[in-house]
Image (cartoon, rainbow, N blue to C red):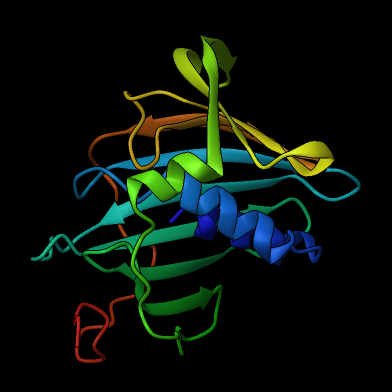
Length: 205
């Protein structure tokens, strides 16, 4: 479920990442990890496009069966901020999706049938571990494991650390985009959506 991060950047830059590339990276990193209140912020730089700042948060309420509300807020240098609120199912699949743009009412988008997260062996086939090291980003210096996702000129290199919530992502570098962690925390995440009580925003039906 790293896909929301890539989709958010694509929506603001108006130059979407190739679907296979985005899906491959998402599958390689596996399901989101962390408790309600966890959050991570990233700076995404795309060649020839505006920089994008993205905050990903596991927001209340806490749900049963390992479900969670993942909220993605996006701010570009030349665009209005917007947010997406995603219900992530127990197997990593997307069950519901709501989008909220400034000064507009939230809109629920249709989603397809929830798909199971790839198995551990499938993720190993998608991503190859290439070593350990130290990486410095705006959020600090981290001991990381390095992965190579894909092959050839279209490959993406990923550095991740176990102490970072959600996917552990510290830095990613692809053919035309870089992603860097700027801040993170294990509590305090709150929704930016307006109060939708009575409209089903907190329901999992």
